[in-house]
Amino acid sequence: MRIERGGRNVGPSAWRKTWRQGICLLACGGIGVALAPLSQGHSDPRMFGQAAPAATAAPAAASVSEVMLPPNVKGREQSLFGLASVQTGAQVSAIKTYGLVVPNSRAMFDVNIAVSGQVAEVFVRVGDSVRKGQPIASVFNPEFITTQKGYLEFLKNEAKLQVLREEGRLPNYLKDAKENLRWWGMSDKQVADLIDNGKVVEHIMLEAPADGFITELFVQPGSLVNAGDKTMKQFVVVGRAVARMVAANASLWVEGYIYPDQRALLRPGLPVRIGLPDGRHLERPIAQVLPVVDPVTQRARFLVDLGRTPAGMAVGQTVDISLQLGSRPGTWVPRQAVLGQGISPAVYVQAEPGRYLRKPVVVLDETAELLQVQGVEAGEKVVVAGKMMLEGLHRISAGAGASAGDHGNDDHHH
Image 1: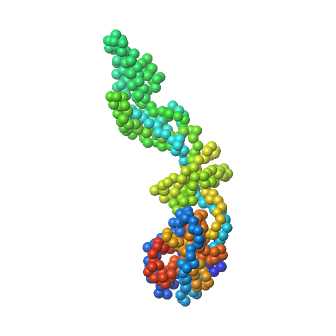
Image 2: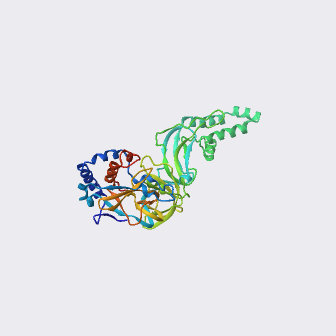
Image 3: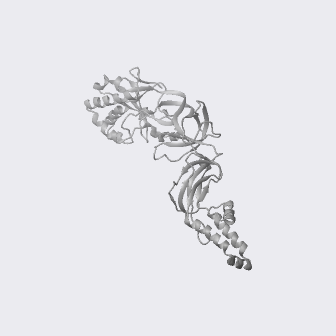
């Protein structure tokens, strides 16, 4: 959609310049005071969301009001106002943005330890690929060593063993003792080495429970791990996560980011075009729209399942993506043409030089740059830059009642 000012294409910087000129000109003409109340509102046209409820008919013609420019402004009209033509038909739109390759949260799990102690070593780093049984970290606990040595002393005490044999309790006692050692994290091989060779294990080894990738580490060498206690009933009160992993066979996701006002455009299944490292593109649907705006980035977020992960893509990688919004028929105006009134949005249409019509509209739908509206006709010229000057004149002529509603305070280009 082409935006015109005096037959020339103009950009956002030119709008801001003419906005300042218009404020000065209107103030010099004695009407600048009318703009003061406008600073209390918000004119961001993106506030409309995706779609207001569809109206069965356009706003009544009787609600249209006329605004005439004062004589001292007419000579500067072309430099003060930017116009755009109302268009009808189908609009194809896409939002270009970026995303981050992230692990599949549905395939993530924590590597937990059930005993307390001090971390002696950490054998992996974030991003490492690990195999099942590979050491993640080692933990030192003096009680662990004491338990092993106590078991060895018991096995050497022939008198106690003989009493248990005579009572028939020795097999159960030995079985319970081995289970206790396994609870500490000893493997069957380590238990056998302790019994057969008297080999004491100094550190509890925490191993990867499955093949996968390390996504987070919660400890470092020297960290104290408080995993809770084992009660007399052999019950573990709490545990402690040492690391977080994602399964090796899980597909990766792309977490995409857009501005919060564009979140209404998102829906599961919407096609997303993803740029690959080799220059090719991959198209995948949105799997999930996250309900909360990220408090750090102030962006709305959505997730795309990559399926079979393409070659060259890894966790933490940034990718270019575009949301394919598709084709929508209707009557369209630029977003910045619509006054940001949550109750009754309106546009200014140039009837002739120096004369403008303030027309209420109904917002039906939107793309990234356009709003679909009822209340204007194809070919009409709507004001996209300088409309707040006209709103100030309208409020003067309409009186205090025109101040109701949430008007804006500037002409933004988004």
